[in-house]
Amino acid sequence: MDEHVKERIRKQYGNLTASQKIISKFVIEKPNLIAIHTAKKIADLTNMSEATVIRFCYALGYTGYTQLQDEIKKTLLIADPRRGPIQKYRDSEEILTRDNYAEQVMQTDIAYLQQGLQQLDYGLLDQAARQIISANRIVVVGFRWCHIPAKWLFSTLNAIKGNTHLYTGAVDNADYFLTERDQEWLVIALSFPRHPAETVALVQSAKALGAKVLAITEGELSPISQMADLLLKVTTPQPAATSGMPVLFSLLNVLIKGVMVYDAKNVQKRLQHYDEISSQLYSFIGDEDEFTI
Image (tube, rainbow, N blue to C red; front, side):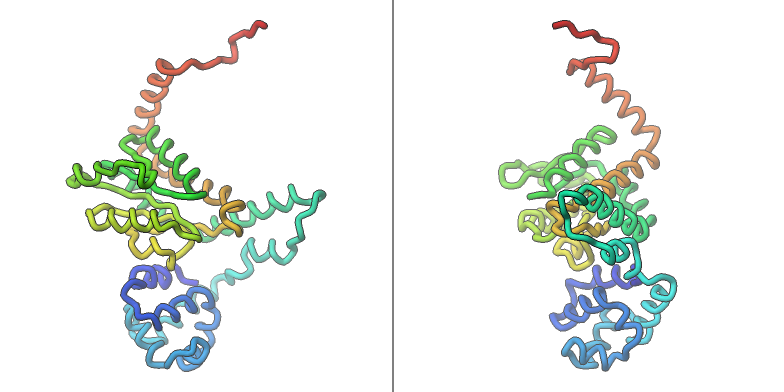
């Protein structure tokens, strides 16, 4: 469906009534039904009143149901998202066995990567890369299974930019938020179902202190997406904890490469300096070195 509709829902979700939130979920999950049915029919399907459906459209800034419907129709005429790489894979999906698991796992990763490529919003990616470049300080947060990609992102950003912190929860001292509030802060939050309360709490605190938030999560209705200044969505295989890493890391890698492209001169200097310091601090074995036993 039209990403513009989803973005409107994301930005207004916190202001919607409980009934309107139910309708917003229906719109995101079943855009085809919005495209072919009247407001009255949608009201019946969601067990709401037609007036509630109309008020939902007003809440998103539309002049009425027809304008919302037309916007969704335009996208569905261009391409049917149900027939993307993921659905094509699912149509031929097999149960994993000892004979086929390697191919099946890799085919799944490829399907989700292709779907991610189709859904990629290059404008948002550019904004995210520029936001990272302009930030004086960056905090990366990700708990549970998101801790590993969060730590990789933190380490890589420190290498190409610097001034990046990894928030590790209650054991971490977050006084840097309080002592340097005049700085341009950016919080990059990674969160997927089930969403850890610590991540949501950190994002809430960061917003209260005036920081910008880049959310990397599954969609517009994620708990952290409504608080985000920018949202990068990731559709992963389920369960995400055991199957979603390749897709998530791919998006993070794209984000890093965007920073390297837009800030190429500074990144090159930073990497050269980083390599020089690393050579002094650590011992490395070169290809020309010989080993004796």
